[in-house]
Length: 198
Image (cartoon, rainbow, N blue to C red; front, side, top):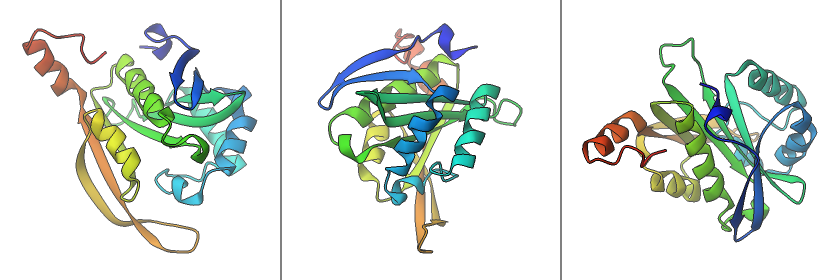
């Protein structure tokens, strides 16, 4: 199923940080996303598998979007990228029903509802493409992000000790949260609320 069949973009959402536009990332966004990534604190990049502030990584990311294994949703305000929510899936793996959500937000708009709006929209997009389970991972000190995803129904599944190292060589723990969408859907259908998780 193509994501744009069930959700259309751009979408506009009002937050405490102003009106935010969400649109699907494409090749034309490469320079704006690179500028956004280079403005993020290095610590924010630790829970992503690759350093997205590197041009070659960003080019590979665009190619994965074009292949369909990644869907990225950008949050834009006044023409500048202020956040990105990405859904990564591997339809050829043993887990084609699982998607990983990766999300980063500009420090300028934190605590203004932008992160919550982007995570809600990314979650809805993941549901619209039929994924049965979703996972997110982040460093354990990112308590705000953890709280946002727990509010969406994600629960802790794993703690990976000393899993990533920052540029100074310091090791950090990663927490993995999961959401079994299929199980929640089944429970809601049992209660007569089949559309509650769309």
